[in-house]
Structure formats: structure tokens, C-alpha cells
Amino acid sequence: MSPTPLADLDLPEFPLPGPEIRGETWHAMMDGIIEEGAGDDVWLARNPIATLVADREAGEFFLRSRSARFPGEYLYETFGINEGPLHDQIRHNLLNTEGDRHRRLRGLVNPSLTPKAVEKYRPAIREYLAELWERLDDPTEFDFIEAIAKPLPAMTIARVMGAPAEDAPKLWDWSNWIQQQFDPVALADPGVLETIQEKVVEFQHWIKPMVAAKRGNPGDDMVTELIAAEEEGERLSDTELENLVLNVLVGGVDTTQSQLSHIVRLLADSPDQWQALREDPGTLIPRAVEEGIRYEPITPFTARMLTEDVEYRDVLFPEGTPLIICAYTANRDPDVFTEPAEFDITRDPKGTRTLTFGAGIHYCAGTNLAKLELGEALSFLAERAGTLELASEPAYASPIGVYGIDSMKIRITPA
Ligand code: HEM
Image (cartoon, rainbow, N blue to C red; front, top):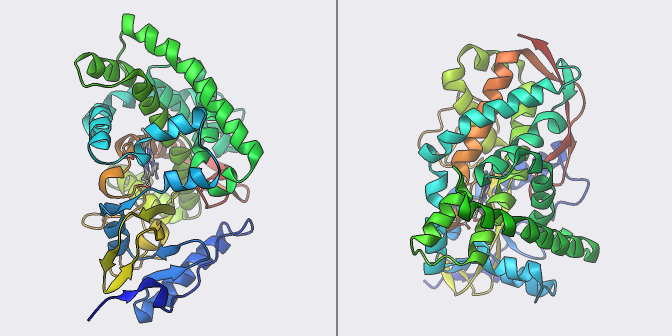
């Protein structure tokens, strides 16, 4: 039997989340897709621009497929980004790179981000948390995002890069602007596009002298490690080196910020689980991290474009098909997770992969660092907060791009 062309399938509609969709309305909309699919084995949905892949196995298949690429070039052609600093940066971005070139560049970054390698940042992360805590006017009620979730990842990335801690706010600003290169809604605004271009130039003016300084005065950081690889003959050009550092910066700041914000929100909403976590932090902090990453993936969507026809589950997906791979629905796939709609930090994550960090060759390079930061932040809070609750409604950002929280007050009883 020949496969059914994708266009002939009768698929449920998946509306693009508009500005009003966030928080509970976001969950309701996405849970609707899962429920619609539940009885009929529906694993695809459609909207005017792309086909959404809803289940874990299929999502992983397309993320791992050699016939699918991140649609960077398509996005930038659509928005007329054909030259200039952002265009040059995009050409070198790991996500837009494939094959041998990607293997070589990833191979240079990976050693600095293994579980063992990131351990050396643990003491610094603890110091930053203590420093941020010291700055609080009232440690029993404060905006968790402004006080902790926002500054911590930027301070950590500054340390990873070997940049001075006082540059962390600048790094946060660049990361947040340049990150919008992946957001089609943002790119459609000429003002945003122009600002992203300016921010790339600012970053380049900052990183060049820093790399030059480290050549003469090596440190214990990622820039130094990349310089060493370059000098050992790994054929890494200056531009590539600068762009790898930029990739780490762009990938590693508002992502970790947003994931931490949501995990703390979920725990503040579950007083019993917070008590359980405080009683058994050794087991339950790593599990709370995994469960938060599963339950509220801050990268609910990524995208792929097919570079050739693909046949999968008796469906023919033609070359050029744009796909949205959905980590939100994949992480609640009832064939993989029991009671997937429950936030349960006692869940044993063994054997149940989520798609929050992607899959395949572009699998997130910073997973170990992100988990280290998340675990340290929870552990710090657990030692200080006997009780934890929300003192204001979280101000959610849009789930398109990175799904963050702009502000969220918490109230704690000192432990
Ligand atoms: C909770 C935090 C984070 C989440 C949820 C996250 C999520 C992701 C996802 C989904 C991808 C793959 C995108 C795709 O295949 O389309 C990715 C790639 C990437 N991430 Fe992360 N990330 C996080 C933290 C970090 C951190 C801390 C760093 C840096 C230290 C980082 C650096 C990168 C880089 C460099 C890539 C590109 C990898 C490649 O193309 O080979 N991320 N991330």
C-alpha cells in the first residue's frame, strides 16, 4: 500500500497561540490536542503555517532525521535577512549547521559542558545565590524572577565564559535580544530586527578584546578552552570561536531563567510537594528538576523543514514540509508517561525521555549546566523556605519562543 500524502489527511486544527494564550489557557489549548488525539491515535495537527507533531516517538523521529533541518535559512530569507551582522552570525549558528561542520563545532564545545566539566561552576553558582539573597530587602516576600531567576543564569554564563561578573547584565540583555532571531513574530517587527542587529555588533565589540586578552592570559573558562583547541590545530577560526561563545550565551540565559521560574511556580502551588522536597532533598530535588522540565517545557515548540520526501507511519511528508515539533504534548504522551497531566516530583524519570532539550545532533549543549543551576537554586531555596507560596499571579510571557514568566512574587516562612 502506498503511503497517504500528508495533505490528504483529515487533521485536527491547531491554532497559533495568540497573545491571550498563556498560563491556564495555554495548558487548556494544548491539552485539547492531546485529548482529541487520545481515542483516535491522532499524532498530527495542522495550522496555516505548519504541521504539528504531537507524540514523543514521532517528535523524536523528526528531530533525529537526517532529512530534516532547523528552518533557519528559510526564516531569514522570509524576513529578508540576507546580509549584515545577524546574517553572518546565523550562518555560523550551531542550530543552522549540519554534517561534518556541525560535528567539528559541537565537538569543540561539548568538553566544556559535560557533567564533570560543569561541576567546577557549582561553587560559583552557590556564591551567586548567596549574593542575590543578601541583596533582598525582604527575604520573606519578593519578586523571584527579578531577584533570582533572571540574574542567576547570566552570572553563571559570565563565569563559564570567563567574563567579569559585572558584565552579567550586559550578557542578559544581548542574550534576550539576540535570542529573538528564532521568533518569527519578533522578526516580523522591523524595529526588533534592527535592534537585534545592533546587539550582535555590540557583542562582537565586547568579545573580540576579551578573546585577545585571554590569548595572553589564559583562565579557567570556556573561552580559554576554545582558544586552546584552536591553537592545537582544530581549525577553529576567530569568527567561529566568537560565534560558539555567542551560541552558548544565547542558549543559556533566558532558557534557564524561564525553566527555574516555572519550577518554582509549580512548587509554590504544591505545598505538600515542597514539604516532601525539603524532607528528602537528595532524591527529590533532582526529580523536581526533571519533572518541572517535563511538565512545563519552556521550549514547547521547535521547528524543522524537510529536505527530502520522508515516509513515516504510512504517511508521505513531502520535501519542504514545515514541521513544529511539540515538546509540550510529547512530554504528556500517555504512551510514555503515567498520569501525564499530574505534576508529581516523586515520578521516577528513568526510561522516559522528554523533548524539552530536543533530540538528535542539535540536542541542547547546555543540559548539564542548566540542570546544575536548577538543582542548586532549589536546594538554596529549600534550606531557607520552610513554606513557599505565590504572593502574586505570575505574569506569563508568550509560549512562542521561550516561555518565561516576567514577574512572580513569592512568600516564604523562613526555615
Ligand atoms: C532549561 C534550560 C534549557 C532548555 C529548555 C534548552 C532547550 C534547548 C533546545 C530545545 C535545543 C534544541 C533546539 C532544536 O533542536 O531545534 C537547544 C539547543 C541548544 N542549547 Fe539549550 N536549553 C537550555 C539551556 C541551555 C544552556 C544553559 C546552554 C549553554 C550553556 C544551552 C545551549 C544550547 C546550544 C548551544 C544549543 C544548540 C545545539 C546544536 O545546535 O548543536 N542551552 N536547547
